Length: 535
Image 1 (cartoon, rainbow, N blue to C red):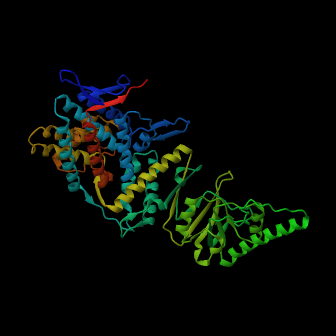
Image 2: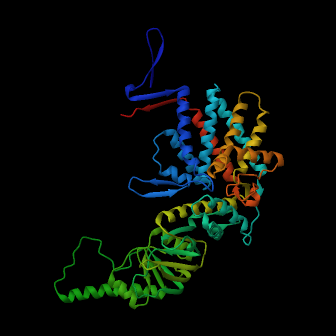
Protein backbone atom coordinates (compact mmCIF):
# COMPACT_ATOMS: atom_id res chain seq x y z
CA UNK A 1 0.00 0.00 0.00
CA UNK A 2 1.45 3.41 -0.98
CA UNK A 3 0.28 6.99 -0.52
CA UNK A 4 0.60 9.35 -3.50
CA UNK A 5 -0.49 12.95 -4.25
CA UNK A 6 -1.90 14.40 -7.44
CA UNK A 7 -0.88 17.83 -8.85
CA UNK A 8 -3.34 19.63 -6.53
CA UNK A 9 -1.90 18.00 -3.43
CA UNK A 10 -4.85 15.65 -2.93
CA UNK A 11 -3.78 12.32 -1.42
CA UNK A 12 -4.78 9.00 -2.88
CA UNK A 13 -3.85 5.45 -1.97
CA UNK A 14 -2.21 3.03 -4.38
CA UNK A 15 -2.68 -0.66 -3.74
CA UNK A 16 -0.33 -3.08 -5.40
CA UNK A 17 -2.33 -5.31 -7.81
CA UNK A 18 -5.42 -3.48 -6.71
CA UNK A 19 -7.75 -5.09 -9.19
CA UNK A 20 -7.03 -8.40 -7.42
CA UNK A 21 -7.80 -7.10 -3.91
CA UNK A 22 -10.93 -6.15 -2.09
CA UNK A 23 -11.00 -3.56 0.67
CA UNK A 24 -13.45 -2.94 3.49
CA UNK A 25 -13.05 0.12 5.67
CA UNK A 26 -14.65 1.87 8.62
CA UNK A 27 -18.02 0.70 9.83
CA UNK A 28 -18.40 -1.80 6.98
CA UNK A 29 -15.24 -3.61 8.07
CA UNK A 30 -16.41 -3.75 11.69
CA UNK A 31 -19.84 -5.02 10.74
CA UNK A 32 -18.39 -7.71 8.48
CA UNK A 33 -16.04 -8.84 11.28
CA UNK A 34 -18.81 -8.86 13.86
CA UNK A 35 -21.09 -10.92 11.65
CA UNK A 36 -18.27 -13.45 11.03
CA UNK A 37 -17.75 -13.85 14.79
CA UNK A 38 -21.50 -14.15 15.39
CA UNK A 39 -21.79 -16.86 12.71
CA UNK A 40 -19.26 -19.07 14.52
CA UNK A 41 -20.96 -18.49 17.88
CA UNK A 42 -24.34 -19.38 16.37
CA UNK A 43 -23.06 -22.80 15.35
CA UNK A 44 -21.92 -23.61 18.89
CA UNK A 45 -24.88 -22.04 20.65
CA UNK A 46 -27.10 -25.10 20.24
CA UNK A 47 -24.52 -27.44 21.77
CA UNK A 48 -24.34 -25.63 25.13
CA UNK A 49 -25.56 -27.27 28.31
CA UNK A 50 -26.87 -30.68 29.36
CA UNK A 51 -29.58 -30.70 26.70
CA UNK A 52 -27.29 -29.37 23.98
CA UNK A 53 -27.21 -31.00 20.56
CA UNK A 54 -24.22 -32.84 19.12
CA UNK A 55 -22.47 -31.96 15.88
CA UNK A 56 -21.40 -34.48 13.29
CA UNK A 57 -18.31 -33.50 11.34
CA UNK A 58 -16.87 -35.34 8.37
CA UNK A 59 -13.23 -34.84 7.54
CA UNK A 60 -12.00 -34.80 3.90
CA UNK A 61 -10.81 -38.42 4.17
CA UNK A 62 -14.20 -39.63 5.37
CA UNK A 63 -13.60 -39.90 9.13
CA UNK A 64 -16.71 -38.99 11.08
CA UNK A 65 -16.55 -37.21 14.44
CA UNK A 66 -19.62 -36.77 16.63
CA UNK A 67 -19.06 -34.36 19.48
CA UNK A 68 -20.41 -31.43 21.43
CA UNK A 69 -17.06 -30.24 22.76
CA UNK A 70 -16.66 -26.67 21.47
CA UNK A 71 -12.90 -26.87 20.91
CA UNK A 72 -13.19 -30.09 18.90
CA UNK A 73 -16.02 -28.76 16.71
CA UNK A 74 -14.05 -25.64 15.82
CA UNK A 75 -10.79 -27.57 15.31
CA UNK A 76 -12.46 -29.87 12.77
CA UNK A 77 -14.33 -27.09 10.96
CA UNK A 78 -12.58 -25.66 7.93
CA UNK A 79 -12.74 -21.91 8.59
CA UNK A 80 -11.58 -19.41 5.95
CA UNK A 81 -12.45 -16.08 7.49
CA UNK A 82 -9.68 -14.61 9.63
CA UNK A 83 -12.07 -13.32 12.30
CA UNK A 84 -13.72 -16.73 12.53
CA UNK A 85 -10.21 -18.16 12.98
CA UNK A 86 -9.81 -15.88 16.00
CA UNK A 87 -12.86 -17.56 17.53
CA UNK A 88 -11.28 -20.97 16.90
CA UNK A 89 -8.08 -19.80 18.63
CA UNK A 90 -10.21 -18.48 21.50
CA UNK A 91 -11.78 -21.85 22.23
CA UNK A 92 -8.41 -23.56 21.79
CA UNK A 93 -6.76 -21.33 24.38
CA UNK A 94 -9.62 -22.01 26.82
CA UNK A 95 -9.08 -25.73 26.16
CA UNK A 96 -5.33 -25.54 26.82
CA UNK A 97 -5.60 -23.41 29.94
CA UNK A 98 -8.75 -24.72 31.64
CA UNK A 99 -9.88 -27.75 29.59
CA UNK A 100 -13.58 -27.06 30.13
CA UNK A 101 -15.99 -24.30 29.05
CA UNK A 102 -14.84 -24.16 25.44
CA UNK A 103 -18.38 -23.78 24.07
CA UNK A 104 -19.44 -21.16 26.61
CA UNK A 105 -16.49 -18.88 25.87
CA UNK A 106 -17.35 -18.70 22.15
CA UNK A 107 -21.08 -18.16 22.80
CA UNK A 108 -20.14 -15.35 25.15
CA UNK A 109 -17.78 -13.68 22.66
CA UNK A 110 -20.55 -13.94 20.02
CA UNK A 111 -23.10 -12.22 22.22
CA UNK A 112 -20.60 -9.47 23.16
CA UNK A 113 -20.11 -8.82 19.43
CA UNK A 114 -23.86 -8.77 18.89
CA UNK A 115 -24.29 -6.11 21.58
CA UNK A 116 -21.34 -4.15 20.18
CA UNK A 117 -23.01 -4.08 16.77
CA UNK A 118 -26.07 -2.31 18.23
CA UNK A 119 -23.83 0.30 19.86
CA UNK A 120 -21.87 0.84 16.62
CA UNK A 121 -25.14 1.52 14.80
CA UNK A 122 -25.93 4.21 17.36
CA UNK A 123 -22.66 5.88 16.39
CA UNK A 124 -20.58 5.05 19.48
CA UNK A 125 -16.88 4.83 18.75
CA UNK A 126 -15.47 1.28 18.81
CA UNK A 127 -12.62 2.24 21.18
CA UNK A 128 -15.19 3.52 23.66
CA UNK A 129 -17.06 0.22 23.46
CA UNK A 130 -13.82 -1.72 23.96
CA UNK A 131 -12.91 0.35 27.04
CA UNK A 132 -16.39 -0.09 28.48
CA UNK A 133 -16.15 -3.86 27.97
CA UNK A 134 -12.77 -3.89 29.70
CA UNK A 135 -14.19 -2.08 32.77
CA UNK A 136 -17.23 -4.36 32.84
CA UNK A 137 -15.11 -7.54 32.63
CA UNK A 138 -13.11 -6.33 35.63
CA UNK A 139 -16.32 -5.76 37.62
CA UNK A 140 -17.60 -9.23 36.63
CA UNK A 141 -14.36 -11.00 37.60
CA UNK A 142 -14.27 -9.26 40.98
CA UNK A 143 -17.91 -10.13 41.57
CA UNK A 144 -17.15 -13.80 40.80
CA UNK A 145 -14.45 -13.69 43.50
CA UNK A 146 -17.04 -12.40 45.95
CA UNK A 147 -19.69 -15.03 45.26
CA UNK A 148 -17.22 -17.92 44.99
CA UNK A 149 -17.09 -20.51 47.74
CA UNK A 150 -14.13 -22.48 49.01
CA UNK A 151 -14.44 -26.16 48.52
CA UNK A 152 -12.91 -28.41 51.11
CA UNK A 153 -11.99 -31.94 50.11
CA UNK A 154 -9.56 -34.52 51.39
CA UNK A 155 -8.19 -37.83 50.20
CA UNK A 156 -11.03 -39.55 52.04
CA UNK A 157 -13.77 -37.08 51.16
CA UNK A 158 -13.90 -37.10 47.37
CA UNK A 159 -17.60 -36.26 47.00
CA UNK A 160 -17.14 -32.51 46.26
CA UNK A 161 -14.66 -33.28 43.46
CA UNK A 162 -16.92 -35.98 42.01
CA UNK A 163 -19.92 -33.62 42.00
CA UNK A 164 -18.00 -30.98 40.06
CA UNK A 165 -16.78 -33.52 37.50
CA UNK A 166 -20.36 -34.74 37.11
CA UNK A 167 -21.43 -31.20 36.17
CA UNK A 168 -18.87 -31.29 33.35
CA UNK A 169 -19.97 -34.72 32.13
CA UNK A 170 -23.63 -33.71 32.30
CA UNK A 171 -23.48 -31.93 28.96
CA UNK A 172 -21.64 -34.77 27.20
CA UNK A 173 -22.84 -37.81 25.35
CA UNK A 174 -21.76 -40.07 28.21
CA UNK A 175 -24.10 -38.54 30.81
CA UNK A 176 -25.89 -41.83 31.48
CA UNK A 177 -22.96 -43.14 33.48
CA UNK A 178 -21.49 -39.82 34.54
CA UNK A 179 -21.20 -40.86 38.19
CA UNK A 180 -18.87 -43.75 37.39
CA UNK A 181 -16.74 -41.78 34.94
CA UNK A 182 -16.48 -38.83 37.35
CA UNK A 183 -15.26 -41.13 40.13
CA UNK A 184 -12.70 -42.68 37.77
CA UNK A 185 -11.44 -39.24 36.71
CA UNK A 186 -11.12 -37.99 40.31
CA UNK A 187 -9.30 -41.13 41.49
CA UNK A 188 -6.94 -40.94 38.51
CA UNK A 189 -6.09 -37.28 39.18
CA UNK A 190 -5.55 -37.89 42.92
CA UNK A 191 -3.31 -40.86 42.13
CA UNK A 192 -0.90 -38.66 40.16
CA UNK A 193 -1.44 -35.37 42.07
CA UNK A 194 1.21 -33.72 44.18
CA UNK A 195 -1.05 -32.23 46.86
CA UNK A 196 1.75 -30.30 48.63
CA UNK A 197 2.69 -28.38 45.49
CA UNK A 198 -0.94 -28.39 44.28
CA UNK A 199 0.25 -29.65 40.94
CA UNK A 200 -1.04 -32.42 38.66
CA UNK A 201 0.84 -33.83 35.70
CA UNK A 202 -1.85 -35.10 33.32
CA UNK A 203 0.78 -36.77 31.12
CA UNK A 204 0.97 -39.55 33.71
CA UNK A 205 -2.67 -40.46 33.05
CA UNK A 206 -2.91 -42.58 29.94
CA UNK A 207 -6.35 -42.84 28.32
CA UNK A 208 -6.73 -46.01 26.26
CA UNK A 209 -9.80 -47.20 24.40
CA UNK A 210 -10.88 -50.50 22.87
CA UNK A 211 -14.02 -51.09 20.83
CA UNK A 212 -16.34 -53.66 22.37
CA UNK A 213 -17.99 -54.06 25.73
CA UNK A 214 -20.19 -51.39 27.27
CA UNK A 215 -19.45 -47.92 28.53
CA UNK A 216 -20.05 -49.24 32.06
CA UNK A 217 -17.03 -51.56 31.64
CA UNK A 218 -14.67 -48.57 31.65
CA UNK A 219 -12.10 -49.10 34.40
CA UNK A 220 -9.22 -47.38 36.15
CA UNK A 221 -6.01 -49.39 36.27
CA UNK A 222 -3.33 -48.43 38.80
CA UNK A 223 -0.58 -49.24 36.37
CA UNK A 224 -0.06 -49.31 32.61
CA UNK A 225 -1.76 -51.17 29.77
CA UNK A 226 0.17 -51.97 26.62
CA UNK A 227 -1.59 -52.99 23.44
CA UNK A 228 0.80 -55.93 22.88
CA UNK A 229 0.97 -59.57 23.92
CA UNK A 230 3.77 -61.95 24.89
CA UNK A 231 6.01 -62.72 21.94
CA UNK A 232 5.47 -66.50 22.17
CA UNK A 233 2.03 -68.06 22.71
CA UNK A 234 3.40 -70.55 25.26
CA UNK A 235 4.99 -67.98 27.54
CA UNK A 236 3.24 -67.57 30.92
CA UNK A 237 0.23 -65.23 30.80
CA UNK A 238 0.58 -64.12 34.41
CA UNK A 239 3.77 -63.12 36.20
CA UNK A 240 3.68 -62.12 39.86
CA UNK A 241 6.34 -59.93 41.47
CA UNK A 242 7.83 -59.30 38.07
CA UNK A 243 11.24 -57.72 37.68
CA UNK A 244 11.21 -55.96 34.33
CA UNK A 245 14.18 -55.19 32.09
CA UNK A 246 13.32 -52.28 29.78
CA UNK A 247 15.57 -52.36 26.72
CA UNK A 248 15.89 -49.95 23.82
CA UNK A 249 18.77 -51.88 22.27
CA UNK A 250 18.17 -54.67 19.73
CA UNK A 251 17.79 -58.01 21.50
CA UNK A 252 19.59 -60.11 18.86
CA UNK A 253 23.11 -60.87 17.62
CA UNK A 254 24.79 -57.78 16.15
CA UNK A 255 24.70 -57.21 12.41
CA UNK A 256 27.99 -56.03 10.91
CA UNK A 257 27.64 -52.31 10.19
CA UNK A 258 30.45 -52.27 7.61
CA UNK A 259 30.15 -53.25 3.96
CA UNK A 260 32.43 -56.28 4.41
CA UNK A 261 31.20 -59.64 3.24
CA UNK A 262 31.73 -62.91 5.03
CA UNK A 263 32.58 -65.63 2.54
CA UNK A 264 31.34 -69.04 3.56
CA UNK A 265 32.45 -71.84 1.32
CA UNK A 266 32.04 -74.92 3.51
CA UNK A 267 29.25 -76.25 5.70
CA UNK A 268 31.54 -76.26 8.73
CA UNK A 269 32.10 -72.51 8.49
CA UNK A 270 28.35 -71.94 8.33
CA UNK A 271 27.83 -74.16 11.37
CA UNK A 272 30.53 -72.26 13.26
CA UNK A 273 28.93 -68.92 12.41
CA UNK A 274 25.51 -70.13 13.46
CA UNK A 275 26.81 -71.54 16.74
CA UNK A 276 28.64 -68.27 17.37
CA UNK A 277 25.40 -66.29 16.90
CA UNK A 278 23.46 -68.71 19.06
CA UNK A 279 26.06 -68.57 21.80
CA UNK A 280 26.03 -64.74 21.63
CA UNK A 281 22.27 -64.68 22.08
CA UNK A 282 22.45 -67.38 24.77
CA UNK A 283 24.83 -65.13 26.68
CA UNK A 284 22.42 -62.20 26.34
CA UNK A 285 19.54 -64.25 27.76
CA UNK A 286 21.76 -65.57 30.52
CA UNK A 287 22.84 -62.02 31.39
CA UNK A 288 19.16 -61.02 31.79
CA UNK A 289 18.54 -64.06 34.01
CA UNK A 290 21.68 -63.37 36.09
CA UNK A 291 20.56 -59.81 36.75
CA UNK A 292 17.27 -61.27 38.01
CA UNK A 293 14.84 -60.13 35.29
CA UNK A 294 11.66 -62.18 34.93
CA UNK A 295 10.24 -60.16 32.00
CA UNK A 296 11.91 -58.33 29.13
CA UNK A 297 10.17 -55.40 27.42
CA UNK A 298 11.94 -54.49 24.23
CA UNK A 299 11.51 -51.53 21.89
CA UNK A 300 12.76 -53.51 18.89
CA UNK A 301 11.88 -56.95 17.69
CA UNK A 302 13.72 -60.25 17.66
CA UNK A 303 13.49 -63.13 15.22
CA UNK A 304 11.77 -66.48 15.69
CA UNK A 305 14.94 -68.30 16.69
CA UNK A 306 15.50 -65.82 19.49
CA UNK A 307 11.85 -66.16 20.47
CA UNK A 308 12.24 -69.94 20.65
CA UNK A 309 15.36 -69.62 22.81
CA UNK A 310 13.64 -67.21 25.20
CA UNK A 311 10.77 -69.65 25.48
CA UNK A 312 13.15 -72.48 26.39
CA UNK A 313 14.99 -70.39 28.91
CA UNK A 314 11.68 -69.36 30.60
CA UNK A 315 12.21 -65.66 30.02
CA UNK A 316 8.96 -64.05 28.90
CA UNK A 317 9.38 -61.10 26.53
CA UNK A 318 7.31 -58.40 24.82
CA UNK A 319 8.50 -56.84 21.58
CA UNK A 320 7.73 -53.70 19.53
CA UNK A 321 6.64 -51.51 22.47
CA UNK A 322 6.45 -47.80 21.59
CA UNK A 323 8.72 -45.16 23.12
CA UNK A 324 6.02 -43.23 25.02
CA UNK A 325 4.72 -46.46 26.55
CA UNK A 326 8.25 -47.47 27.53
CA UNK A 327 8.69 -44.16 29.37
CA UNK A 328 5.40 -44.60 31.21
CA UNK A 329 6.32 -48.19 32.15
CA UNK A 330 9.68 -46.94 33.43
CA UNK A 331 7.97 -44.21 35.52
CA UNK A 332 5.40 -46.65 36.91
CA UNK A 333 7.72 -49.53 37.75
CA UNK A 334 10.62 -47.37 38.93
CA UNK A 335 12.93 -48.97 36.37
CA UNK A 336 15.52 -47.39 34.09
CA UNK A 337 15.50 -47.62 30.31
CA UNK A 338 18.65 -49.47 29.26
CA UNK A 339 20.07 -48.24 25.93
CA UNK A 340 23.14 -50.56 25.85
CA UNK A 341 23.02 -54.17 26.80
CA UNK A 342 26.29 -54.08 28.72
CA UNK A 343 24.80 -51.57 31.19
CA UNK A 344 22.11 -53.90 32.52
CA UNK A 345 22.37 -54.09 36.33
CA UNK A 346 19.92 -55.26 39.03
CA UNK A 347 19.24 -51.63 40.13
CA UNK A 348 17.87 -50.75 36.69
CA UNK A 349 15.08 -53.31 36.78
CA UNK A 350 11.51 -52.11 37.29
CA UNK A 351 9.27 -53.88 39.78
CA UNK A 352 5.60 -54.70 39.32
CA UNK A 353 3.35 -56.78 41.60
CA UNK A 354 1.48 -58.37 38.71
CA UNK A 355 1.84 -58.52 34.94
CA UNK A 356 -1.02 -60.27 33.18
CA UNK A 357 -2.30 -60.72 29.68
CA UNK A 358 -6.01 -60.21 29.13
CA UNK A 359 -7.98 -61.17 26.05
CA UNK A 360 -11.21 -59.48 24.97
CA UNK A 361 -14.37 -61.08 23.64
CA UNK A 362 -14.19 -63.57 20.83
CA UNK A 363 -11.48 -61.69 18.95
CA UNK A 364 -7.81 -62.52 19.31
CA UNK A 365 -7.25 -59.08 20.83
CA UNK A 366 -4.96 -59.19 23.83
CA UNK A 367 -3.50 -56.51 26.05
CA UNK A 368 -0.83 -56.56 28.70
CA UNK A 369 -1.67 -55.11 32.12
CA UNK A 370 1.21 -54.04 34.37
CA UNK A 371 -0.28 -53.49 37.84
CA UNK A 372 0.65 -52.95 41.52
CA UNK A 373 3.76 -51.07 40.48
CA UNK A 374 6.49 -49.85 42.80
CA UNK A 375 5.60 -46.25 41.98
CA UNK A 376 1.88 -46.05 41.28
CA UNK A 377 2.09 -42.46 40.03
CA UNK A 378 1.19 -43.55 36.49
CA UNK A 379 -2.37 -44.76 35.90
CA UNK A 380 -4.44 -45.79 32.90
CA UNK A 381 -8.11 -45.15 32.20
CA UNK A 382 -9.30 -47.96 29.98
CA UNK A 383 -12.48 -47.09 28.04
CA UNK A 384 -14.84 -49.58 26.41
CA UNK A 385 -17.67 -48.62 24.09
CA UNK A 386 -19.90 -49.78 21.28
CA UNK A 387 -18.11 -48.01 18.44
CA UNK A 388 -15.06 -45.94 17.65
CA UNK A 389 -16.89 -42.60 17.69
CA UNK A 390 -18.30 -43.30 21.14
CA UNK A 391 -14.83 -44.11 22.48
CA UNK A 392 -13.32 -40.95 20.95
CA UNK A 393 -16.09 -38.80 22.46
CA UNK A 394 -15.66 -40.52 25.85
CA UNK A 395 -11.92 -39.75 25.70
CA UNK A 396 -12.68 -36.07 25.11
CA UNK A 397 -15.24 -36.05 27.94
CA UNK A 398 -12.81 -37.75 30.34
CA UNK A 399 -10.15 -35.18 29.37
CA UNK A 400 -12.55 -32.38 30.35
CA UNK A 401 -13.34 -34.10 33.67
CA UNK A 402 -9.62 -34.62 34.40
CA UNK A 403 -8.93 -30.94 33.72
CA UNK A 404 -11.74 -29.87 36.07
CA UNK A 405 -10.40 -32.08 38.86
CA UNK A 406 -6.91 -30.67 38.26
CA UNK A 407 -8.19 -27.07 38.39
CA UNK A 408 -9.97 -27.77 41.69
CA UNK A 409 -6.77 -29.15 43.20
CA UNK A 410 -4.90 -26.03 42.02
CA UNK A 411 -7.57 -23.61 43.23
CA UNK A 412 -10.47 -24.98 45.24
CA UNK A 413 -12.93 -22.09 44.71
CA UNK A 414 -16.20 -22.83 42.92
CA UNK A 415 -19.15 -20.87 41.57
CA UNK A 416 -22.56 -22.30 40.77
CA UNK A 417 -23.33 -23.41 37.22
CA UNK A 418 -26.52 -23.51 35.19
CA UNK A 419 -26.05 -19.85 34.23
CA UNK A 420 -26.28 -18.77 37.90
CA UNK A 421 -22.82 -17.13 37.92
CA UNK A 422 -23.51 -15.28 34.64
CA UNK A 423 -26.86 -13.94 35.87
CA UNK A 424 -25.27 -12.79 39.15
CA UNK A 425 -22.47 -11.02 37.24
CA UNK A 426 -24.98 -9.46 34.87
CA UNK A 427 -26.93 -7.98 37.81
CA UNK A 428 -23.71 -6.72 39.42
CA UNK A 429 -22.38 -5.15 36.19
CA UNK A 430 -25.74 -3.50 35.49
CA UNK A 431 -25.79 -2.01 38.97
CA UNK A 432 -22.21 -0.76 38.62
CA UNK A 433 -22.91 0.95 35.29
CA UNK A 434 -24.57 3.92 37.04
CA UNK A 435 -21.27 4.83 38.69
CA UNK A 436 -19.57 5.52 35.36
CA UNK A 437 -20.32 8.81 33.59
CA UNK A 438 -19.77 9.11 29.85
CA UNK A 439 -20.26 6.88 26.86
CA UNK A 440 -18.68 3.82 28.53
CA UNK A 441 -21.87 3.42 30.52
CA UNK A 442 -23.66 2.16 27.41
CA UNK A 443 -20.93 -0.41 26.78
CA UNK A 444 -21.05 -1.61 30.41
CA UNK A 445 -24.81 -2.08 30.15
CA UNK A 446 -24.34 -3.91 26.86
CA UNK A 447 -21.84 -6.22 28.59
CA UNK A 448 -24.46 -7.00 31.25
CA UNK A 449 -26.96 -7.89 28.50
CA UNK A 450 -24.37 -10.04 26.75
CA UNK A 451 -23.77 -12.07 29.93
CA UNK A 452 -27.41 -13.15 29.76
CA UNK A 453 -26.72 -15.00 26.49
CA UNK A 454 -25.43 -18.13 28.24
CA UNK A 455 -28.41 -18.72 30.57
CA UNK A 456 -30.67 -17.81 27.63
CA UNK A 457 -29.00 -20.45 25.40
CA UNK A 458 -29.27 -23.01 28.23
CA UNK A 459 -33.01 -22.36 28.55
CA UNK A 460 -33.48 -22.44 24.78
CA UNK A 461 -31.64 -25.74 24.38
CA UNK A 462 -33.68 -27.29 27.19
CA UNK A 463 -36.94 -26.44 25.40
CA UNK A 464 -38.03 -23.85 27.96
CA UNK A 465 -39.36 -20.37 27.13
CA UNK A 466 -36.01 -18.52 27.07
CA UNK A 467 -37.00 -14.92 27.93
CA UNK A 468 -39.66 -15.91 30.45
CA UNK A 469 -37.38 -18.39 32.25
CA UNK A 470 -34.44 -15.99 32.33
CA UNK A 471 -36.45 -13.07 33.71
CA UNK A 472 -38.03 -15.33 36.37
CA UNK A 473 -34.61 -16.56 37.56
CA UNK A 474 -33.15 -13.03 37.46
CA UNK A 475 -36.08 -11.75 39.45
CA UNK A 476 -35.59 -14.53 42.01
CA UNK A 477 -31.87 -13.74 42.36
CA UNK A 478 -32.56 -10.04 43.01
CA UNK A 479 -35.47 -10.74 45.33
CA UNK A 480 -33.71 -13.34 47.49
CA UNK A 481 -30.21 -11.92 46.97
CA UNK A 482 -29.14 -15.48 46.24
CA UNK A 483 -26.46 -15.92 43.52
CA UNK A 484 -27.08 -19.70 43.36
CA UNK A 485 -30.27 -19.53 41.27
CA UNK A 486 -29.81 -20.80 37.73
CA UNK A 487 -31.73 -22.35 34.88
CA UNK A 488 -33.30 -25.69 35.79
CA UNK A 489 -32.30 -27.57 32.61
CA UNK A 490 -32.95 -31.08 33.88
CA UNK A 491 -36.45 -30.31 35.21
CA UNK A 492 -35.55 -31.22 38.78
CA UNK A 493 -38.08 -28.73 40.09
CA UNK A 494 -35.72 -26.32 41.86
CA UNK A 495 -33.73 -23.36 40.57
CA UNK A 496 -31.20 -23.56 43.40
CA UNK A 497 -28.01 -24.91 41.87
CA UNK A 498 -26.60 -25.77 45.30
CA UNK A 499 -29.37 -28.34 45.75
CA UNK A 500 -28.84 -29.65 42.22
CA UNK A 501 -25.07 -29.91 42.86
CA UNK A 502 -24.17 -28.01 39.68
CA UNK A 503 -20.73 -26.47 40.21
CA UNK A 504 -18.11 -24.88 37.99
CA UNK A 505 -14.54 -23.90 38.83
CA UNK A 506 -13.96 -20.23 39.58
CA UNK A 507 -10.79 -19.97 37.47
CA UNK A 508 -12.65 -21.50 34.51
CA UNK A 509 -15.43 -18.90 34.67
CA UNK A 510 -13.03 -15.97 35.13
CA UNK A 511 -10.91 -17.17 32.23
CA UNK A 512 -14.02 -17.36 30.02
CA UNK A 513 -14.97 -13.75 30.71
CA UNK A 514 -11.44 -12.40 30.32
CA UNK A 515 -10.65 -14.32 27.12
CA UNK A 516 -13.97 -13.43 25.46
CA UNK A 517 -13.50 -9.74 26.31
CA UNK A 518 -9.94 -9.70 24.94
CA UNK A 519 -10.94 -11.23 21.63
CA UNK A 520 -13.93 -8.90 21.22
CA UNK A 521 -11.75 -5.85 21.94
CA UNK A 522 -9.33 -7.02 19.29
CA UNK A 523 -12.09 -7.53 16.70
CA UNK A 524 -13.63 -4.11 17.43
CA UNK A 525 -10.33 -2.32 16.89
CA UNK A 526 -10.01 -3.53 13.28
CA UNK A 527 -11.32 -0.86 10.90
CA UNK A 528 -9.67 -1.72 7.60
CA UNK A 529 -9.55 -5.12 5.93
CA UNK A 530 -7.51 -5.58 2.76
CA UNK A 531 -7.81 -9.09 1.46
CA UNK A 532 -6.84 -10.78 -1.81
CA UNK A 533 -10.00 -11.31 -3.83
CA UNK A 534 -10.88 -14.84 -4.86
CA UNK A 535 -10.53 -15.75 -8.49
